[in-house]
Length: 605
Image (cartoon, rainbow, N blue to C red; front, top):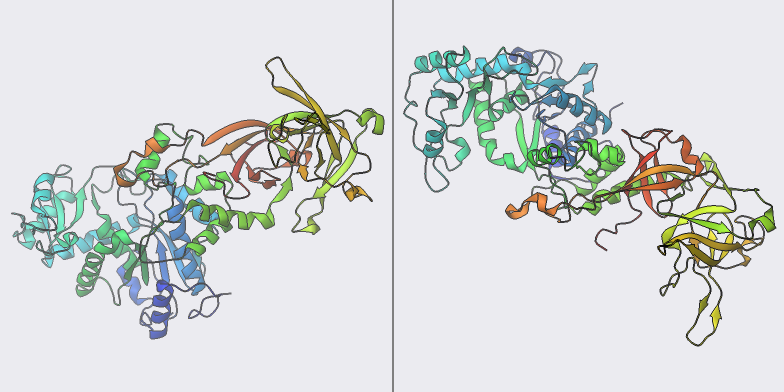
């Protein structure tokens, strides 16, 4: 059940948008509105029961690509505000550019928003809309603007229009077609609609002020000719509204109260207000109109969010696809092992401001660690394996015998029980856990040492986690000098959890997997896609900053509990970090795990 609409459901951090919404609710700004009816028909403004407490927001992506982490911030913001103030957030596709849009992107966006934990249903109504739902109304509104003298058909070439627009230091020049009568413009506009003019031959422009200091108000184009099949309307239309014209109309027809967008649209706000005022004057829309508010977009280090550049990475096979775990797309983050809770926590932590700033990538990873630490099952894994042979095992335990060991599935949730594995004569350990000549401070396995004065020091003792203490005796090498086996002796009566096990004190503890029950797996070790914190800043070619080591694939051994891992199951591989069973390639017969993030931020260290 929703809490009272005038109060957030919990004590969220305040920001300027929350203050605006709370003030509007307190002042009853939209109390005169009547909710109900069918968006797309202006008559619905006067229908339905009064609901003065409700706020309506919208998330309006263009279906021309996959959503990225910047969109995730906007999703969490808009849907989160609607949730906290007892309102509703619409999902609306701004599908006004048929040449770049596709149903594939529509499906991906729907899936991504749902995965992030949000929906657009309210009181039995599905608030999923498309700009193309309103094309008929938008056309009628355009004809009204023409008849009222607020719009005209311009047949200058694109180059002439660009030159006559002026710049920040020079006012624009009126089009020679600006003085046409409403009747002439209306006839010409209908010829555009009926396909009698070629693509690019004419545009419909709003008549505002060619001398405006805001270049966006210098008679912006609101309709263009574009012969392209639309994924929703097919070939019904050969003229399409411009985004800046369509968006405020969509907001008004859906009775949005707070239209929240990023700062690059701030200069478009005067046109947004101008258009809604003109249509309200003509009786096409009711008051009060929606208001547009801008916030700073997400700028994340080591990431690019340009759809064009992300598409270039995919098209040039620099990555394996839109869902490559190195991509900042929501599908990529999901495949990397990010959780919806982590992305929501990240969005909450970075907050909402009106000034641009950079967020360090480690903030995103920190939110992920903080959510996974409490929920991820633990497991041991050896990513760069070398065999450890316990040379006195047979003498102490008997040939072929194994010792049962166990560990918590999740130390934060003891009710989940324990996982089991077995200790035997042959184990897999990390190659880096053995050093022939140990550096200072090295507390893992090394053989007996002879000092410069001729004195000898025995091989080091370490605890094999959840198992026994062993003492290193040496190693075998192949013809190329590479270590093939590490040898050690078991120290009796040191099994973890047994009486007296702590009598032998050691400084080093290492993880291991039994050779006899290990699960072979492909493990993909992902790093950041770019070496440069700002890969496309200052005119740089972002491709020059690609990290050649952003993916390394290894053949690893995992403890037997991971034999039953399912797609998207997340684990903390002890010592190594957080990993997820790949949602595309993982199969019980051929396990594939992706490294999501390390246990701490070690980038560049």
